[in-house]
Length: 226
Image (cartoon, rainbow, N blue to C red; front, side):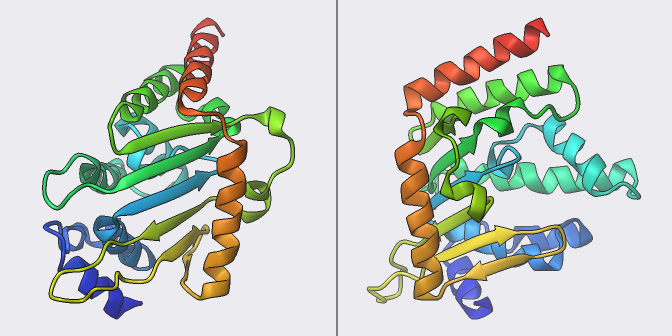
């Protein structure tokens, strides 16, 4: 997997930028940042939090204060800076930005991080991101009942375009699942098949983009009036 990441990083202008941030990027997360920067298509399901690629500064800082209780504010800001730097791949010019399809559990939108003002800013950021041609933001409402995402938890499926240099086949897809102290990088056919099946189910249950936008707007209004 490390060799695959090195090959993928060679195809992108953002090669290795995260190394400049040192300890702000956990060693187990470095591989993901490299894969993410080289992916052509990201399919992400989030059960609990806004995806890192769509977070605002204040929302990310609120999470950093929870994730790094013993860190200094300067160290937390540095961790947030890494997250904001990652977001540049969604509107970069070269190489072509990836397609991001995000399905968010309704609980993600209703879980307040920081304070209501932070959440309003974050939800508005989702609406702005959804206007990008290469970004889709959809909501999985509580009303759908039990679903495969509740079992799978949050995950990302990363797909890659054919690489340069005469190789016709793209790098193999990877399913990524994160925990408190590390992450799983899954690329075996049966593992990928399980996550693709889960994604297909979530994709079928989620609201469409227009309906999702309306729900986000309704939740913003509710937060304002609480």
